[in-house]
Image (cartoon, rainbow, N blue to C red):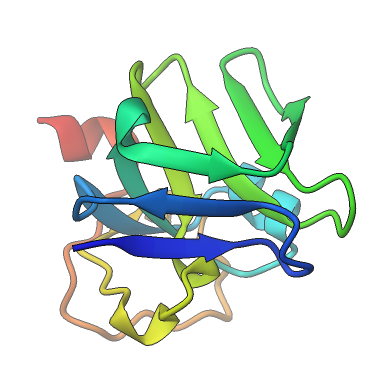
Length: 133
């Protein structure tokens, strides 16, 4: 199993030779604002499971989080946080085969936008702490 993907212009590419540890649809304000989207699809991997091609730039988006992006087209490609040491989170629909992305759950639903209706059967966690219990 190999998952490949990258940024809009193709300058940044990634390759993961394993299935994601988890997948989630995040509704937190930080993810929404950074992606200009009502919800963000994530997939988590061990840091050493992902090989990068191209030079990502990084933005410290909070005291505990860094977001990687392409300096050419501006596409965000990764997220790392001290909350999940040893992991890198990739945008699920940045895959070359986004139809093969399958979310496991919704997280941070306490921050979801009221006009966005969530009517699937996936587990819904109000916060990350709930996911870890």
